[in-house]
Structure formats: structure tokens, C-alpha cells
Image (cartoon, rainbow, N blue to C red; front, side, top):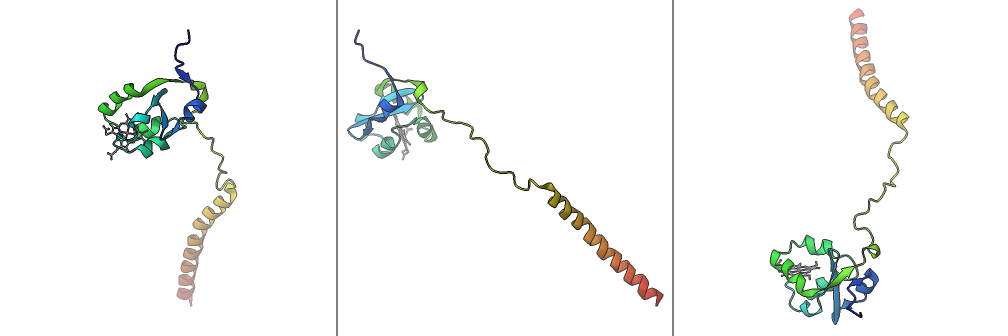
Length: 134
Ligand code: HEM
């Protein structure tokens, strides 16, 4: 009864977004890194800028050492209610219009590319025969 609540919504975690009270969400877990802000080798500012969102990508992109990962346990305060996190890698449907949807103009260009050299060649041969016959 009255045990410490350990599942938070993203909105709740997002409230802890300043240098006096800083929580991070990494890999579904919530960490209170307030005391670590001054000691973080990457600086306190980067930690603050990773608040209010799923910071998993930020944390992973740096390539933190196993030592850094082991430190996480010291800051753990609870889990996230995963229904409150927007999907991280949603496939955004391609809404760009297809370029050159009208294929008929493409066909016409190809036809010209084929015909023009043929016509020039025909002219050349024609002139040659014409000159010979004079
Ligand atoms: C509780 C979470 C975190 C812990 C315990 C932590 C711990 C550490 C540790 C121990 C290092 C030294 C290098 C290493 O051992 O990998 C480090 C470096 C670094 N961290 Fe974090 N970190 C945390 C979160 C973050 C986040 C969210 C970011 C956001 C981008 C970040 C950015 C960096 C950067 C940029 C460095 C490199 C500093 C340098 O080499 O100049 N860290 N972190």
C-alpha cells in the first residue's frame, strides 16, 4: 500500500526538464539524472536537451561505453507507460507526387532521340548520292 509509483507517462517525465530536476527516458526506463548533470562527461546541457522525449536514440548515437550503461541503474526511478510514447520510427507514407507520371512525353523524347540521328544520316547519304550523280 502506498508504494512508490514507478510507472510514469511521458507527460509526467517531461515535467522534469530543468537543471534542478532532470529526468531522462532511455529504452523504456526513466532515470533521474539531476545529480549527474555536473558530472556527465558530455555536459549537463546535452542531458537537459534530451528531456521531454524518448532519449534512447540520443543516448545510443553517442556510443556510450558499458561503464556508462552500468551507471544507468544508479539513476533508475521507474518505467514508462509505453502507450504514452509516440512511435519512434513511424513510416511516413510517401506523399511526394510521382515525377513524370505522364509517360507519353517520355516516349516522344525517346522517339526523337532515335529519329533525329537517323534523319541526319539519311540526309548525309542523300547528299552524297546527289553529289555523285551530278
Ligand atoms: C543517464 C544517462 C547517461 C549516462 C549515465 C551517461 C554517461 C556518460 C559517460 C560515462 C560518458 C563518458 C564516455 C563513456 O563512458 O561512454 C558520456 C559521454 C557522453 N555523453 Fe552521456 N550519459 C548519459 C546520457 C546521455 C545523453 C542522453 C546524451 C545526449 C546526447 C549524452 C551525450 C554524451 C556525449 C556527447 C558524450 C561524449 C563526451 C565526450 O567524449 O566529449 N549522454 N556519457
